[in-house]
Length: 109
Length: 112
Image (cartoon, rainbow over all chains, first blue to last red; front, side, top):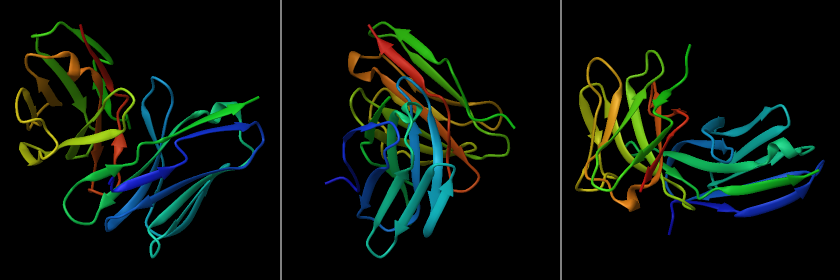
């Protein structure tokens, strides 16, 4: 079983829709990260969270430490949001980052 | 402040050749991490280095792979005698602490 599980694996949405991507983890963490990867592209860090909620533009990330769960929301989705979104956690023991397998999002005009 | 730099961005090697991937961390960052992303798979941790020291190499294959982060210059991930299964995207990340990491653009290695 992976330390980080994401759902859904694939998501197709119409432009303007509200999107939610979920992440659950099984290890103790010092922080949770949401990353974005465009096809053939590099990785961009969107958020780092250790509690509560963060907002950046149309993106919102929340974390519930007790339930070991985080969500990434995209409001008013746009085709340029099409990318793979990856959840990752910094374990609070050792030095490792654990990654989810990613959610591939396609937003259709 | 330039971000994490990786070069080359694309690397083609024939089976049996050596591949050298370079990573220049962000200015002031002394922690470097290497990750591999195999086709259709997620990112996997390979190795964590600080200047002149390997801190954790638990994700490195036992043979043919090595990494260094010298006192001066970039971190190097070296793959000897490459095989087709080594074809992947290799990402480097750097950090000031172990919590927040900044990723480079990646090197896409193709072994023919």
